[in-house]
Image (cartoon, rainbow, N blue to C red; front, side, top):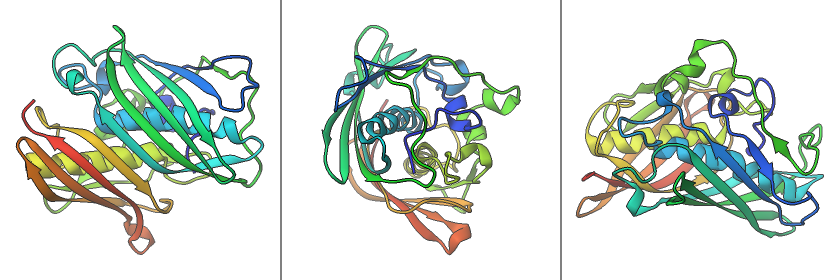
Length: 285
């Protein structure tokens, strides 16, 4: 289950705090929302840029919530997420600092929802575009409670110092037996309201595995000059137990770009396949 991570006690939402406003009076059949993400120093790389895994995580948050609004009184689960970073915002001042995420639902069908999120920096430069497909379902206990139009503009960050640590520490990332394998421990702070691993956490661990492989360093080391520019994730089953293992393998190279395939499995649940992804990783930045 993805999308609703706005409530008290949901760690990923508190770590990646983002006020979200619904545009309009809340009656539109295809909702439109906008999030303002204030980047903090512990979240970004040495250039002040958010990593692709974290970028996918905040896009999943606002995109999933907005998709869910289109389905009330039902809700959604994310099935596919595609992210493309803007080439002009991969280096230099563009794409750094605080970000605006503008999300529109493009289609609401009987069994699925399609949405798009455009991410821009403070100067209005494009940073990334994401597309999400979600399946419609009826969750146990009903959908999350919302007052329309939605105004999520305040959330207190817990006193726990882990909420001010690096992404590698907050998401409990570790190394596998070789570069290209990243491990994530499933702690309570990484679960969504239904008790399963937050979809953004999956994006973070598979991004770490892809960069680790291409940079040839153990995960979850930082990889200056190496970044995933394109990411396609297919969510196949929920993660419940852990540890979660993301395993990357190179399947093609073109100039400074390496195409990487990543599989994500729940090692504590008989290695159940949770997600498959394809990433394009650049090495010349």
